[in-house]
Image: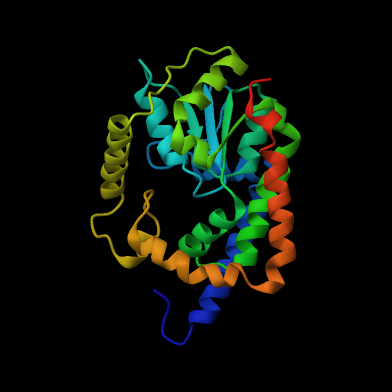
Length: 254
């Protein structure tokens, strides 16, 4: 926790780190060597794409990749080697160039930025800029990946797996999106969260990969900052990019 009286300084440092992170992870030449060093122990960190990776599941942070990963694996008859959770455009680009099946979950910029304001304690502008850089970088590869909107994933994640199989000629098991199966996945995520830390402090509530009332309350507090008039042009640009990335033709198997 920041020392009393140094909150703004600490917040400024965190935002600089955040902006730098989302700049570096947009470019494979910068990000991939660092990521392989940082994630060299796959038992403790999230796996990075390699030549023998069978599937990549990615998205800008807070797009539901934890749910997607758990749901996908639960539908398979054997373990699939998945690279996930870097939230790096560089991982998506690398996977595409290596011909590895890749699923990218796309959440709308406003809700994504709000979630990052809560999770990373950054400004609305920083969250929007990071969201735009991620999606601008993957846009040229849109036809070589499978995209699913965050809302569509919550409605029927199995449909995204069907499109993966159609596009990449794979035979992944298709998860059945029923209330019972969804509840099982949420419970698996809760178990994972408990393993990440026994004591759930207010700060830890920001990190958990499930919606919480506390997080929603913080998002509602931050929404006014996101809706500030001076951010209207940036929001408009982000929304236009969202429409381009999730255009109808991008959401069918090519």
